[in-house]
Amino acid sequence: MSVANLCHRLQSQVSARTAAGFAEVLRRLGAPLQVAVAGRIKSGKSTLVNALIGRRVAPTDIGECTRLVTRFQYGTVDRVEIVFTDGRKQVLPFAADGMIPAELGVDIEQVSHIEAYLTNAVLQGMTVIDTPGLGSLDAASVSRTEQLLGAAKHAKDDEGSDELDDTSRNAVAGAEAVLYVVTQGVRADDQQALAAFTAATASREAGPVNAIAVLNKADTIAPESVEGSGGDIWKAATILSEKQASTLKPRVADVLPVIGLIAESAESGGFTSADAEALRQLADLDDDVLQTMLISADIFTTWECDVPSGTRLRLLEKLDLFGVSHAVEAIRKEPEITAGALRRSLLDASGLEAVRQRLSIVFAARADGIKAAAALASVTALAHASGDPGERQRVHDAIEVLLAKPEAHQLRLLEALTLVASGAVDMPEDLSEEVLRVGSNADIGAQLGKPGAPRPELAAHALERAGWWRSFASFGATPAQSRVAHVVHRAYFLIWQQVREA
Image (cartoon, rainbow, N blue to C red; front, side, top):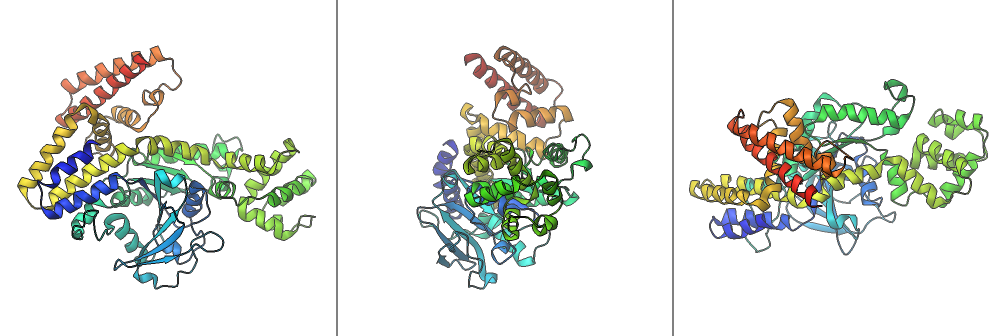
């Protein structure tokens, strides 16, 4: 990778301290993309983490572990490592239920964070960082989150250099991407909370390049409170997500509805054949009786019927009322449905697949570009922290040469997108929207704002917009706008070439 080559080449031209920082940047470039899952307390972050990983490993009840940052990463042996603030590590096995132990048996005030290693295919391409909930945290939890996401310690780099100083650690540490979890109401300070995760995105503000949000617990929305929903819960959740997207943009690429509890149960093995059988028994009840039971959790668990109350409570804990209702409807439509097919139906109803697809488009498909852009931000920060004007100039010149190369266009597009999204470059609203659209999507139809259009139409539109942005760059744009416009012009030109040659 060109950014890695730049780091290697510059290491001999900078101070030992800066070179140690570059070594850490190189280590991060070679590691999986790091995604921090953030959100308010009780927003269902850990439940969503379990669903994404496909294993119920993150504790979801309030306890010691939910006050700590936990990094879930790939490992050849499943294990838990407690990392203390002084650098010590203590290895623990997972609990008998497969989760991180509820009680760690140590003074958590001395704990920096937890490293959880799993032989899990998802984690081969993405490290997931579960963070304590924002909004109702004790000061120690806040401090630990900031220290790990904004100033993670790496006592030695791969080449045995001295420990990085605090400024250097701040420059190179942190997740490269953010998955932000909201519930029904986006509060005014959710914007501030997203901004606070600047440190969690390798010294770069969260934006449409590296951040998406999910509206969790979508099944708890009262559809009658959302105009245009027609009484349908999922329609209501979709409408609400679109409204929240307009509130949170440009800090996030999108807001998607999801039901984390159902997703976790269906994806992590929590839903069993015994659960399917209990749902079949419920499906046999008179419809009037079942509809009455589904009015509330209390009625559902206390109503007299042949399905034991404890079994119904278990179903409620795994699926909630919406999941139970969906499963019963699926059984009534197809009485012979298997437990496996019922699980897949529940998974479809959870919205998890759409979240995974968006993660793939926004994060996975552009992981190298996101990591490279974060790496350049880290390299720049390290050079500025050195205090040596000559060193700073050498690094600056090397980056400019790199960005001028044709193969660095993706980096320049991500940089332009970040400049516009953060407000660093002021653009008219319609042009800002166009820059965000072109830079935030991997699908050509979506980039051009013409999903599903035939290739000739896509090619013609791309060429027309390329010409417009070239003219804008030369006539009427400010110097800062012109820099962005040249990048967007080239993006359209490359799209035109790609469509024409396909």
